[in-house]
Structure formats: structure tokens, C-alpha cells
Length: 262
Image (tube, rainbow, N blue to C red; front, side):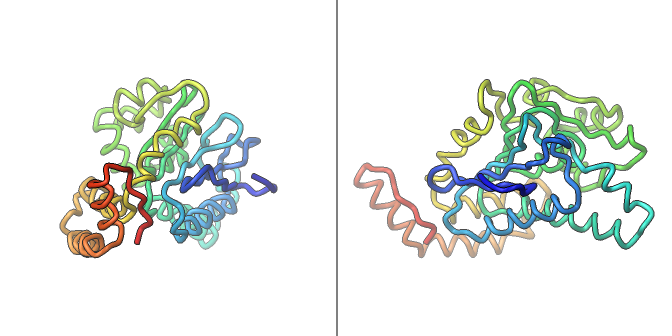
């Protein structure tokens, strides 16, 4: 990891990329440039066939304190600039959500506002005991977006989502685990725990993972019929793949398969 970039990318062993939000002086709150860099980092990783999983985290004991309020306030009365800022945030979210490989948010400290939304767009969330989750628009006189609200309801549950949105309260790691927002609460390095959590996924067939991710995300949003043909095409691709033949060979040879995504 090198340089002064607001977004750092590092490889950890075979197939795992770790993306770190590097604005610790702002508790990793993101300004427009950082949102753009985050989207660009995911875009590059999503195009790299050697990447099998992505861990998203923050530097300095914070995941992400959301949007940089001071930076956003500077454009709030400038409609064109405000829209550009908002479009940049939406593109970053889309790159995270649209990844073909599993994305795991490794959460320490604050994970609030846009940071919470960012974590919800990962497939899994691993937290340490310092993690705190919140959606505070009601305390700022703002409105939480409808698609982000849908994610919060689907992942944290109807009652918890209403509690967080109505009160703006911060939810600790244990409560987040209890409601299903967090997959696991760990001691020690949350990034190491996330890498360990995702490692078995990197050893499975990439085409299968891609199809499962598309189907699961669509089912969660009530869009299963919309992606049925896309999933079917991936099924046909898998049937004709070398990975399928490798899986059969490995089964009969009683060894771990070596999948390549082809």
C-alpha cells in the first residue's frame, strides 16, 4: 500500500483485493473525489479476472463516517454541481453492488450515513466490537433514499430499520449481529477476519458465484424474473466450461478443484 490516495488497493494472497478508504482525518467520510476514486477502484477490480473477492474497509479505526458534510454543503445551493456530486455517489454504490465477486465490508468504528449504505451494498459485513452503525438523516433534516431504505429493511429487518431511521440512533456491533446486519462480530483484526471469511468463496467456481450473486440480489429485491434469462445464460456457460470438467475430475480424484473461471 503506497501513496496519498484517498482509496488504497492491496492484494492479499491469491484472488483477494482489499480496498481501504484512507481519509482517517475525516473518519473516512468521503468527498466527491473520494467517492469517484472508490467507484474507479471497484470498476478496475471488477474488470480483473484474477480477483475472486473484495474486502472493503477504512483506515485508522473507522469504516466510513458517511458523506463529507462540509464538502456536500459547499454544493447544496448549486443544482448542477449537487447533481454531479450525487451521481458520483450513486456510481460508486453501483460499482460495489454490481461486482461479480463477493464483497465483504470489514467494519471498525463508525459506519454511518453513506458509510452504512456503502456497507449494506456489500454481500457480507464483518465487524469488530468497536463497530457502530447508523442512518442519521432525521437528525440532519435530510431524507434517506428509497433504495437505501429498501436495503436497510431487507438486511436489518423492518422494525430495526424503522428504529434507526426514526431515531437516528447508533446501533452497536452486537445489536447489528442480532438483527442480521452483521454476519460475524470478531476480536482482533477485522480485515484478517474478513479475508478468512471469504477465502473459501475464492476457491469455488467464479461462474457459479457470479450467477448466485445475481440471483440472490434479484430475489432480495423482488426481481427474480428479470434476471432469469441472465442466470440461465450463465448456467449454459458453466455447463460448457472447463471449470465444470475440472470439478468432475476433482470429485472423482478426491482432491480440491482448481477453478479458473473458464
